[in-house]
Amino acid sequence: MSDDVPAPVEERLRGGDGTVPKVSAIPIEMSATLAESYTAERHGSIQADSRVLDQLHQHLLMLSASGLGDIRGRGYTPQVESAPAVGLAVDHLYESAEPVVVTAELFNVSEDQIPAASIVPTSSGDASRAEPEMKERDGAWKAVAEGLKPGVYRVKVTAGTASAQSGFEVLP
Image (cartoon, rainbow, N blue to C red):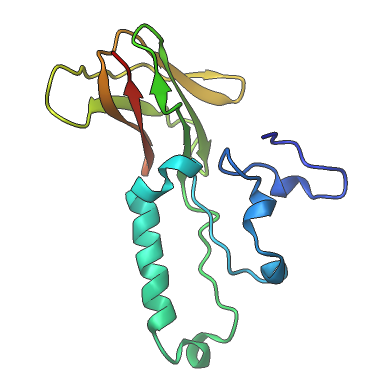
């Protein structure tokens, strides 16, 4: 997938979740509404993100409430686009000797916030922990963890009040 957008498409529709472009995530019949919401998460990890699950829960609660249109007017949508967020990218599978590369993009986070990465095993056993240093490169923050033992891991990147997490496995 490319982050580039074709000529007639506005630049603000660039990006996406690494699987589909942002514009493809908006159903055609909803093109003129403000009903969509965004989160800085990769496609394969979205179901494990506690912020996404909480947001979904809140949306379902709001959908089940009656009379909100009478109070707020039709078309009310809370603004989530200005909330601090971390966009996290990590491959899902690594060979045992392969370095694990963690890439993070910061959205609406103060420039003086340096993100921190932590890698922890998801189960007890012989797997190792790591806190690789995040360094800014080419407009994104990157960290490399080497020497992780085989196992399933959870990586979390935090910057200020924003965070994102994903999972990956290191093969034996």
